[in-house]
Length: 257
Ligand SMILES: Cc1cc2nc3c(=O)[nH]c(=O)nc-3n(C[C@H](O)[C@H](O)[C@H](O)COP(=O)(O)O)c2cc1C
Image (tube, rainbow, N blue to C red):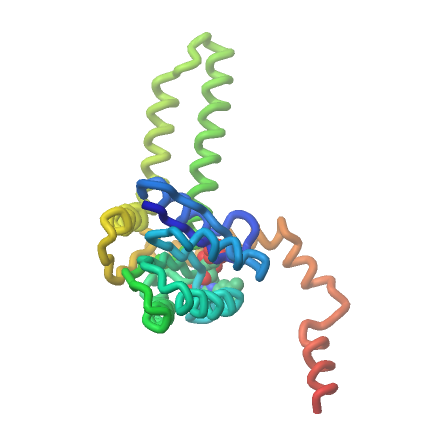
């Protein structure tokens, strides 16, 4: 059995869609192919991989309550491809969104279901994940927890001669378990969809979220985006830019009228 995962996030690195594709891949048996859908140049490679595939898993972010616009031309091309080749392929979708409620992905699921009906391929359902950005926070937290524990083990080892301090190892396990707790809904639903992919069964539509109370999520997301904006220059680029944000758009508008 061959499963093709299509990560539809336009991000080159650190996308939640890429992360969830890799995680689902851990639980799916048989041959697996991870593809990235960012530009037109990716279309042919993906369609080639789909020729002998039994299942395709689209992992994608929710954009403006729907499918990201750069994915739509690919879906159009795939529709023609399906009508020509009549493939027997099961389609699953794993969508993630910025707001905490996974149910926000419902319109996206309906779009993908309608797409499958038009193509004559089998819609097997999808998983919608709320607070997708926290998946990145979770994986960064796990890396930091491991890095700090290794540093701690080394320093304690140099000081005492014992490089496997039980206290540090127990704390490491506790911290990892706490980080995983926030993702327990996502992990459970993800294993479930992977089981359906393996058995070629329908999954239906299910929604989950990161296990954080909403007020804490908003605080965490604000902090995360502030740090990301500072690192990537977004905040300061905006503050010190001579050009006003709507200037370009207004000039284009003037040209038209
Ligand atoms: C242009 C754009 C539109 C978005 N629209 C929505 C939306 O309608 N609802 C929502 O909950 N999140 C929205 N988001 C947030 C993304 O769904 C969220 O950041 C997601 O985790 C990104 O996934 P990725 O890392 O796989 O690209 C939007 C993000 C962008 C950039």
